[in-house]
Length: 561
Ligand code: AMP
Image (cartoon, rainbow, N blue to C red):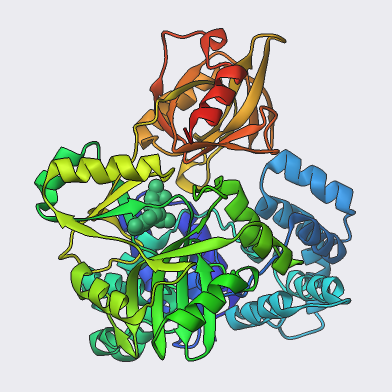
């Protein structure tokens, strides 16, 4: 049985490495060393997660709960724990410091025993599972008790990683890519075999387990499974219709509906709906459940589509309304009446026991059309096959006129690639202008980016009061090289630091690309950006020349014109 101490030692070792090849080697050794039973758990732990992404089990340990458990295990009051977190900027370091005194007691105690029983990896997983299952009146007490147990049974060095794992933020820089490569290296599989198995299972733990158990043959047997959501296929932006058609030739053109993605699993009479983030949203969408029950003729199926909320004039309502539907827990029927949804289906991945993802889009569509009867709130979306640019432009104009986002230009011969954003699905939307926003704050990065600033807080300008109003954060679109340069530039502008957060003198203006402006109570400006990406630094602009709050409002209002 592998001890958690061994896992913690490997984490420490990885934390000292910056190259991904070396990291892969260490992870690969770890995966080989543990038992078959431990392997799925360790595969997730090393990525800083406890349960696979598709699982409805959620750990749900907040910082407050963690502080309480640490406080009880160490005898240090919660306020002091919080203070330590602020000082160190890291719950792991805090756990080490606060439990160091405790370990002395343990050592004294241990002199009466032969050996302190070591916490095993599976025991930690068991405790986390107890925490995730806890419900009802005494759930908080159960969670604290289980956490306290593991902190009281470990050394301070183990606590560094136990505490980080409790909030699923391990900070050692190991992500899916490294684990995928490590699995293929450990068990002599091609990266392609691992990739495919991961696509159909959405669970690297399962892939690693199968690989250890029966190598290539066992991994090849893995396939889609009803009620286990897989990642959705994604689309790449195309700058132009002409370019897209030149690339694909005869393409399948569909409207790009303005709604929310759903993956629907029909398993006999049981219907489960997953959101784009693979959360089970079935309970909030009884209208979609009954539409699928009544109009999808299949014993079993996995369907892919977009749920759209329409207004009285048949135009899509704001995205926020759909979110309200998806998040609704109580009074669901009332919200069904207030915000009715239409399901536009555009793909099918599984039908009556058969996995369809390797079929071409055209073959899948044929099956989809044959098993769905279109009705008022469920339709197979229209698809036109053409390489005529004029026709594509007409469809594009019609989609925009109807209030939708644009069009999808799909390769009719392509398989369904779960989780992939590739050239087989292209999206064409009106080009959004970029925004020039002021950088007012930042956060230090994690892992190998710990010495660099990892994300930036952005603001627009309020000329009336001379204030900068926060509107969101940007962390994507920045290369390592850029990050290093920006870190150097911003280090001169730091006003105040607390933990990982930095307040910056508002001097630098970023040019930011984005998908959409949304209303948001989370930021003082009242707005937030969907998918912000850094385009560049506007060295020519002063902070006062950044976008004004008025202009942000104007763009927001005109988005759906
Ligand atoms: P984006 O979110 O901009 O990356 O665009 C991809 C999203 O468009 C998908 O995740 C779907 O939610 C949505 N979408 C709307 N209509 C379609 C369609 N006909 N085919 C595929 N995706 C669609």
